[in-house]
Length: 195
Image: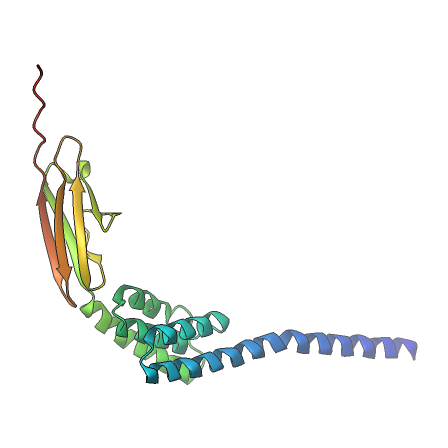
């Protein structure tokens, strides 16, 4: 009898502990849904930044394609196409289980194509000296020469430099869908005369 009672108490403790463990997942889902509702209210007010942050927090609590899609849409509204593209790519990292997730993933794919078409790019080519001797920076960040680089619409400063050559600076204004090809030629520095 004591043995049966101890087994029953053990099973009851196991059941209670599993219920306690399940509660945080349920609570996270509820918090995510509440955040998504708040985000939708922010959208109605035109506050896309706040909505994007709430979708992001909801996705951190309970990762789901629907939250990623909401966040990406808000980033597109704000003109942050590069980050939106990254989030849309993450939409399909895990296979969808429910039809709502599958639908969100399909919309993510469609929006990703639109965002890719809208995202401006810059490609830089250097003629003098050879590209392996040149360092190119865009907005202070070193970039790879000859590679198509994605940027959000806006103004950018390109600086190229090499030892023994004068730095070259070029300003570029990117609009949606622009494909900017920049060709740079650095000029040798004049040798200083010895006296």
